[in-house]
Image (cartoon, rainbow, N blue to C red):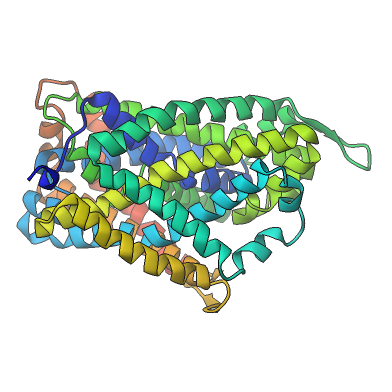
Length: 463
């Protein structure tokens, strides 16, 4: 039957945009800016860019090549490389299974904020306690989560080229235009505080981009380095089965290295622009104190920034949250596709049936996540020192434990068991040049495993 076929991307552009769409999600638009703001701006950016060209490149290349070589989703792909390492596929598939419900819950928050601004009620979103008041409601967060999940499921239901590729080819150029436009506007802002202090967007740009190592301790630098490395997992969608899945849809004659370089460039530019949109604007209206808002930067601090902009702030608010919706949808589609594809490959059932199964699962657990702020509310101390609720527990287990663990075992498999030649041969199978081959071998065998081990130690509270 037609719907049992796995499907393929129609060309390299479709693959690059879909993979970039996966990478450019809430991790870049939401998480990257607040980490950059928290971690000394320029120092975080410097660490991130260096890691993206080395650490991120090695993991991204490995996963895409495993996908194309095996023509399988993560649940079954690793077994094709080495039968004894099939268990990594289960761990890799668990990551999107855990992430999908809470990602859709956060996607629902974004939809709520977009419609708040679209209905000219942006002033409400800027009020103290608005965000907390919303997420602690019983029904509204659930309804918005269902809307977000329904749209994600519809795209997956439509297939690889008619759903994922078609959506990415439309949304990614629009998203890029919005990001660039808002970033440029952010740099033109200025504000005079009550004490007469003038702050401009260019001042915020300097803080954001120029590294300042003054009085920085080694421990502080290590935390920034670990934050930048942890962010890369989100930014390039590795260790969650997505790039293996998308790699499995790439044709054998595609220039894999060229496509990987394009994904890397696209993603890094959008991540930097996301920070450029947000960090200077927050600095202008709220100073350095506003930059320490953490995860609340997008839902608490930014609405206050838009409010301070006057009438234009309402328009910027609409455009900003529209852009975040686009970014969130392309990522949620990739997360859901990794699970659906795994079910299709492992159990040999159709795309439509697999999508329905995942939809029901995500709906049930998405509701549980939403209820984690009211009916099921609790607070638990996590090993990394933070305090969390249901969403935070899901996030901690998937992102701080499973993703580094998958990456570490993958490095052991490719670096020492199957050997880097397995990936190098796949990347160069059509005679293509592997320009960073030496860097790749050093990273996958030595550097990446050591860094990931340090990240795991930090996650369990040892560092």
